[in-house]
Image (cartoon, rainbow, N blue to C red):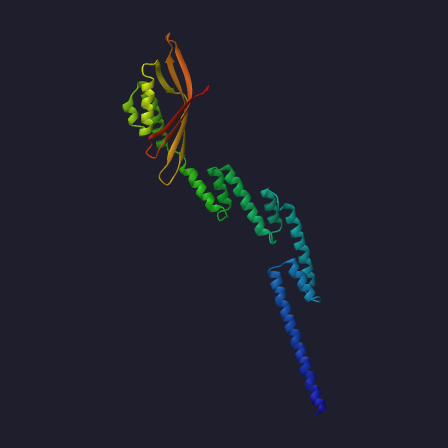
Length: 268
């Protein structure tokens, strides 16, 4: 009877030990799977301390060495401003824990270049390389702003015609012509200018350079500025011609009316 009882206890003990070992092995495998899914050197060292005789010891030690190399290589380039450094790192270590950070650095550096260039081509190049990049929405908005800032052929033609008409009106002392192309403020100042030079020997104004036009989009509609050079020809008391060249800057409102005009002698 006693032998039977001892046998039962022994069998039960062996069974418990086998079950315990099975549970430990199962727990170890689960921990190993979790470690390899999201590997870190600190977690790997903790695993080896907990399971010093694990059959995965060599794999884990190899991974620790590999991740240490990742860290060393990343430390060499982390402050770099050269996109190629991060592209090469991603190519060399495609599965490293620094891969996303390397991509983010490339994204950021490419955006810095595109923003600094501030051209439609540079912004489109960024979007081609990073269609879903961190700065893609800003790139699209800035690109559209540049497109919207480009005067149309019709706008260029209209502004060029108005500037020509303005200086033709000054030449002819034609206040009525001015009233059709200027705001009330510019009209008033231009009339004062004409009255102040009445009887003087000014004969003509002529535009002597291409008209450069800038367009500024806004929620209320675009406004414009234009620059060019203008030659003023007059005669002295002896009838000899006197010429002077001016740098001109003109502003236009959303209705394409001349809203500001400044002239500065190029020798001033």
